[in-house]
Structure formats: C-alpha cells, structure tokens
Length: 517
Image (cartoon, rainbow, N blue to C red):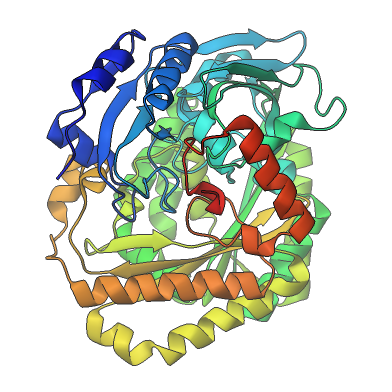
C-alpha cells in the first residue's frame, strides 16, 4: 500500500505550480521500474518547467523528504525505486520541449523529459541528429534519463555512449539550486564538472536541461548480417569491426536470443515497417520491392546461425557506405563467418524507436537484462563464464521455466557490451502493462506469480552482476544494481563521497543510487 502524504507536504509541493499526485493507484504505478518495486512513495510531482522543478525539490527536501528523478521509466536496475518509504518522485515527462536548435554552432538544447524519438523527429527535417541518437527504448526513454543512466545503441559503434554526446547541463540540486554546467561549444573547459553529473543515475542532481552536439544526418546506408558457428569467431569479427570504425551500429545475438527473436517477431510486421519507412522517403516502387525481398528472405537464415552479427554503416554517399560493408565482409570471412540475409538491420533501422513489446518474452515471460561493457581482450572469457553459470543451474532453471539469451554490441572506442537477458514465468507489474501495446499484450498468456522462479531469477541476476565485477566490466544504468563503488580506488571513492556531501549534504537526492546513502 502507498503511504498517505501529509497535507503540509502536498501544499508545499503544490505551491511550486507543479502537478502533485498522491492517489494510491498513481503511487503504486510509480513505485515500480521494469524489474522490481521500490518502497512506498509520499507523492509524485510532475513539473512543467525547470523553475517548477527547482521549487518543488526545495519544498520536498525542506520538509525532510528524499527526492527521486524519473525519466521515461525504462530503468530495470533500481534507478528510481526508493530504498525507504516517504520519497517524493519527480516525473519529468511534462518537461519535454526542444528548447533550441542551433545550426550555426551545431548543438541542440532540450528539456530532460524529451524522448529520444521526439528529438530525432524534431531534427530530421533539418538533416541533423545527435552523434549517439537514442536507445532502442527511445519511444519512452528520455534524454535526461540517457544522461543520468548513460546508454547505447543508435550511433554507438562510431560515437560511443549517450553521455559522450553531451556538451552541458542544467541540474537541480537537492536544495533546489539550478546549477549550470558546461559550455555549448565544447567540453571539457577545464576540469570536467559536467561529467560529474553524467551517468550518476540521479545521485547528485536532477537534470533539467541538456545541450547535445549535432552532426549531419547520413546520406547513405549499408546493411549486412553474418552467421558464426562458434563464439570465438563471433567475438573476433565484432571486435575487429569496432576497431576498424566502419559500423555505426554493430550488434549480435547468441543462439538462444536468435531463437527468441524468431519466435517473437512477425515477418509481416517486418515487411510493413520497411515498406512504410521507404514510402516516407518517397520510394514507393523501391519500398514494395524491398518488402518483397524481406518476405522472400524469411527467417530461415537464423535457423542455421549459432551466433548472428548485424552491421549498419553510413556515409555521405552510397559508395562510402558500401565500402564499409565490404570491409566488414572481409573481416567476417577472415574470422570464419558467413553472410546471411540482412533482414534484421534493415528492419530495425526502418523503425528505430519501435514499440517496447520485447519487455516481455514471446510467451509472456518477465524479462531482465543485465549488461557489462568489457575490453575486447576480456569479452569472450566473460561470455564463457556466463555459459558455465547457466550450465551449472540448468536443471533448476528448466524446472522453474527460466531461460536466457544474450545480446552483444560494439561501443566505439570502448569495447563490447555483453547483455544476458533472463526470462521467467511471473506476473506482470503495472509499468509493463502500461508500456507494452494493448494488442500485443492481449496475445500473450498471463502468468501467476511464482515465488520460486522470482527468487531464482534474482539469484541469477546477482550472479551475473558478480561475474561482470570479477571481469572488470563497467556499466550503464548503475542505479542500485551494479557494484560501482566496489570498483573504485579508495581515494576515488572518498572524492565521490565528498562531492556527494557538497551537493547533497543531507543525503536526500535519490539516496541509495550509485551505492551512496
């Protein structure tokens, strides 16, 4: 049950001008992230601008309540789930404006609640975008969340993570101060104070506005998919493609995730998405031909793919994009892979911010991804450690209906992300039911809560986190899940705690995030 907020708190929050919600259904909904439920909330505040945000934060902390930022709600690592009851959660969805697009100096400023999809749509008519231009959850995930959580996908193979595209921030501190960080022309200027507030999972402040670099949109695209019989050749090819800088996106699936994708995805939907995208670009005849190719290719190519790898390349002209794809083919051939139909990268690029129906498994199972970013030299051995973990637990997982699949993705200049995803039969939470499309949800079976499966899923999740730690992985979405502080040099940890005390002396800004209390 949600707690009842005292009238004094509600009145103080309401004086900010922001929308304040305290009904039980709302508080129950906002207490959940994708994976789990946090402690009961006192109130949910929905500010319309940064001044309302700052005033409401000041009112909440002035009354002794912790404050927690929430972007699009796509966290699955406890980024905004409270550890203790009585927190005030800030939903920034109403702060979703594109404030400025500066084509002369090539930056864009947005409010923190602007989604990646909204930003992309605003920039597309100008032939512009940000270097890293969104996560796969960008239909809901916000730019502010991307700066707090960090993240990868679109543009990551060449431009790195979300935080690397940031030029400056305006942040609400725990006392309601609006702090401006960074310049719009370059970062860093002196010690990187902006960077302190990036990837902090909201532990140091609530993002209000963000300035991001702009780049020209690509004029031409290339696509390729490959299959591999073993993980060694799979990793070798993916790593060399990243080191070569030839792909804007490079990602792949192990045999288990390949099987899940084949079971979940609709070929008719594939063709429809691709035709729709090409029609928007004005190529009706080409769209119909491409849709026919998708149907003809089918999904049979994945049946014989133990491991798959998918490459997207971009260029200022088609010859440039084609040359990068040709280089990828040579790398794959040398590693021992083979080319297959390029359906998957074409489809995913045709609808970059699609519905978030993969939040459930193909049979309605719950889903929990756990990821780590590793240097190329350690990725394969870490992946092998997960194989041993799942082999050791195979009998119990089979008994409880738990299965898994693994995604990998190259991150420009950094290495490889490995993301094991757990699936288990269990009841859906309110956030999942609100996010997955109604028509898709209606086609899936609903599962009863299984305490045994839930406990095992949490045990496996923690074991995966520990394996990543043992292999010196780094993480996005640190939240309350990954062992960030355990990885710090003691002097660095002391500095982090000193910074936390400076900007949040009472410990009321998202307490527990980053392991900071």
